[in-house]
Image 1: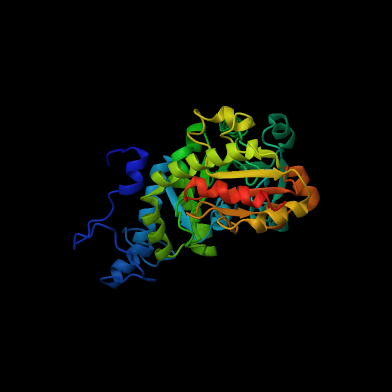
Image 2: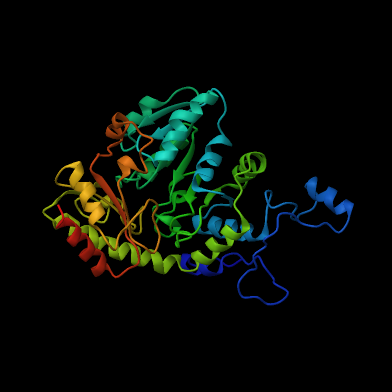
Length: 392
């Protein structure tokens, strides 16, 4: 297949379907199982001697379209779609680690990823060390003879710390670690970890990839060998399988990903600049600002700064609560990447699995507010925030 530019691939994707009725949009295969023409064909498919679908937990044409499209966008060999973003996190870890192995993880992560690593993996005899991955010396100090994997996200949720993917990719290769990067905040349009030697790239497809707030899903992109293992373990036997309908909705959402990301980034830049100048804001975390340490990665590693901003209000925790409650256009809700602007308080919501001490170590302040900039007119978003500041 001809290699198109990313924006074109978001719309057209793989040439996978030849619909007999000439449908422009690929059909939704809303079926749990697939019929065989005879017993021999069923046996051949189960034996892996004949290509074809058997049961939707094991594969589905609608899901396959999504997997192939994301693999192309991330420039990986293959992909596996999962029921949720955490399904993608779990699949990328549980497929490759076993009792006695050691995982090096970023000290700041999405709250449920942190909870999985801190509380669940040790139950199965998997060691986990959390480190500041902006510091290569900490990475080196965390290495053990049983270290097998490195896991991080960049920019980091929620404080928008940007990690050096080239450094992480080289470090993982040097020490024979499987490297996993959560690329949810950037999407393949703004950042391709594969270019920096990363082995596995995951997404919460719930967010920008779908883009409409009506699906929960995940995706893992990697080599054919890695994806085959994931499908034979976590998807086949644990069952974190995406529904065909959700895959179909994400396929539809991907068609507008390029124009949506351009608008998210453009508006977020304007909102971040507004917040940085506001007297009631003590600090703004957004890589598009020259004051942000991650600004230096724009261009080579990141094509844009994304649509998520974090900031701290110059005041008490109560002031932050009052501010959030005073917004009218901004919706108080977790998640990101929706058409609606969403605002939330990480310490009490998305990152509540952290203890106060763990949040402090991860650089997540109690007064931190995270805002996912939507597709509304940016003037209305800024006006809503300005009015909310008047309440404190």
